[in-house]
Image 1 (cartoon, rainbow, N blue to C red):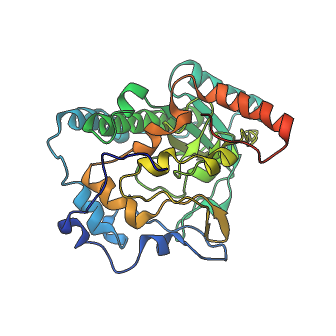
Image 2: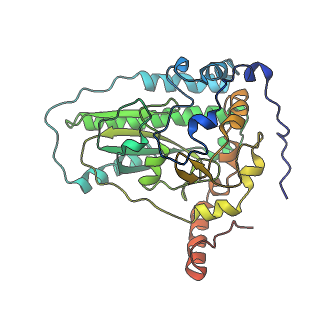
Length: 334
């Protein structure tokens, strides 16, 4: 039986829905398509006029324009975004690939970010019409403060998302600056605005976790409660391996985020999207609620993996169960 939901029923604001384009966001995302194609930017375009949902993106900016908690975080984030990058200096430093990758641990130790990983850059991840002529992508993750994010969809949670996007941007610019000072061209990519490529696939490829039913990555250490940024470069970092922790089977049996989603956008089953069967969130249902609350993050906050101290124990429990019963037997904890 579905849990009661204080945010349902949800009826979108007609002023916003009047701005919706004729084309479905699900169609832009490739829902139901059997053949692979590169992704298109569906939202968070640097130029809203360049995408069909641009008018809805502009409408988002009119929501809570004077909210103190949000304004308090926007200023520092903008300063980070506006800070210049250093020039590429000298000949490229030569290091062993494993040494390059180990050097990223310093950014975690200093508190710049909570996670690092490296993947070989695949052009499949690059948005249609964009170019990204590099061979490596360094992924960076910054964790939310759980006490703040669990207040979703209140403004305090939205402010926390902005704060962590600022930290993620600083981490990407710090890593890119470090590489540039060692003679290697490097470009940071920071959210929420779309860059040259989508970030979730390389984050999964480099070991950050697995895709959850709510469309976000689930990581044992931080659940779904973290944000991403990236740096692209040709410095020969050693890729870090993907990791599996039983998340996929767990999500198949869990309905927590599905029941908590106000617009009922989280689907109970995987969908075919541009040739891949995977978890998918209904864009056309999600966006109006997201916009009207200047962000949402309810699914991130309620995810069982996101509760502090739960994820690692849950991953260990699922691993023990797989040893006893074999793959595919994972179920959510009572």
